[in-house]
Image (cartoon, rainbow, N blue to C red; front, side, top):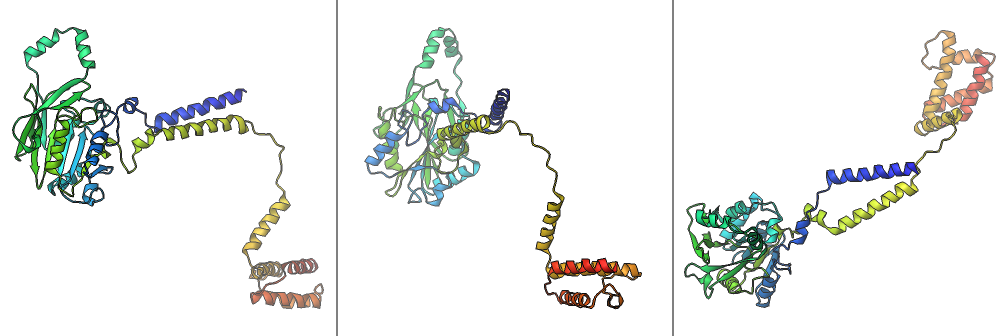
Length: 424
């Protein structure tokens, strides 16, 4: 019983060591948050926008590859007139090469819509470690800096009771984006609602280069820019400083759906497709190690394997080796096995040549002759112990060996033993 307990302890220790060294640790918060993908039915998803566009006869597609898939034609039919809707921060950040490929796709006559969680903070944005400001800047070529509050509002906020501060943190923050000028994208759009589950900072966006950037929307009540339009080649990049405006929770509020309708009508051609960037939120078609290790089927399979292994170790495997008596090696069997090995390797002619050479060399050694394996026929013919019949048989077998023909090794060995006993 003690041996089994020790074995169980060692088995559990080995499993714990394997877990800490090799398996990535799950993040419970990621399982609770709904990611902004086209298949998500919870408030932060885009399933409502997906179904609405399809009901209007507008082609929609979900991107499950890197951005290079946009250039290969595997996602959409038309090379231009398409719309890609991507939400930041990304769960799988875009690689530097991808951003260059996305720039080429936009310059070919397509539209990139970037929804960045800057002025709003949804729950899913807190579950990844990527830097949204840097990623947004790379995709939109806009530099975002935090707008520091003035001293007086900061001073007043410091005197608020702690209870009211905590209550404000737990309540949904609702703000709106309003037009800052006349533009076809904002036709019949008076206010676009956005929701923030947590407090968000205020941001200012400025162009990184000399290309013209048009500011067409701002946060109501603050005047902070929240919507930018920039031409890029034959296409354009439209940036929002909010990630929630087209989500399931608010797509039907105020003029959010009208804004999406204007974006599609203004940017898409007749053959164009509205593409939802699901790949960079983790819904990829290629191998993803994180998704593999988060799959509950893997965890259940590993649990069954561990359980069966422990049962095998404790119940089936013999814990003590049975002590057996010493069994010496059979010399005869060893010699027989060695003989079978050489017999399977050498031909009978080669083996016969070896037997004859040894026999002749033993005679030549007694006579003081060179041991070259040459047969001393004259000496054997004159020896009284060698009969004429045995000498004739020896000559016959020697002739067969010299010509490479097979011989009866047993008969040859018996003849040589008999002659050796008579002459030596």
